[in-house]
Image 1 (tube, rainbow, N blue to C red):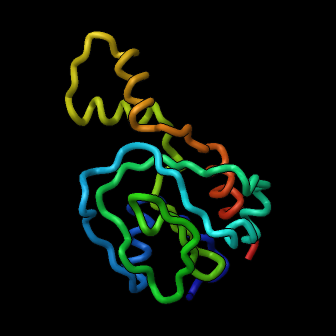
Image 2 (cartoon, rainbow, N blue to C red):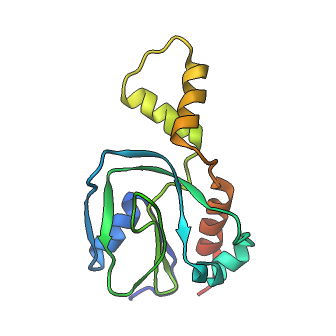
Image 3 (spheres, rainbow, N blue to C red):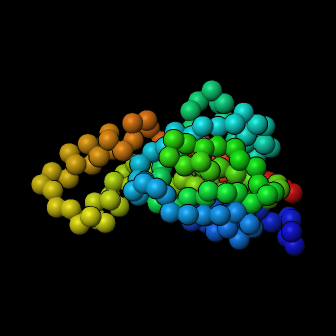
Length: 162
């Protein structure tokens, strides 16, 4: 409220912190850690937002984002507008006023980053890493990420003049 001309982008934990700080609620997910790709279920009005229009997205194209979390927003702040959900997360993308954008997923990650993180986290030791990476990407990402489109949305949001 004190800085309406500053754009604030929250990604993953940042999105959760913003929601919680402004009156929403964040909890552990009832399932294990999510690390893979999520197909976003977009509301049509998302494509009418000025920064999304500036991104020149094809509304007919499915948006898929990388995920790496096991907490999620269960209740948005009163002023928030929900624009996307997924099979595993009710709140994927939201805005508050015109200057706050929250994204649960990781537009900053690609398939290889998720697989390599999982490899290191689990201290795996495989003979043929290339085969492991290829098979992991196929299992965790049944649909390819639309990372470039998601990054365009972030860029145009941050660059918009309020």
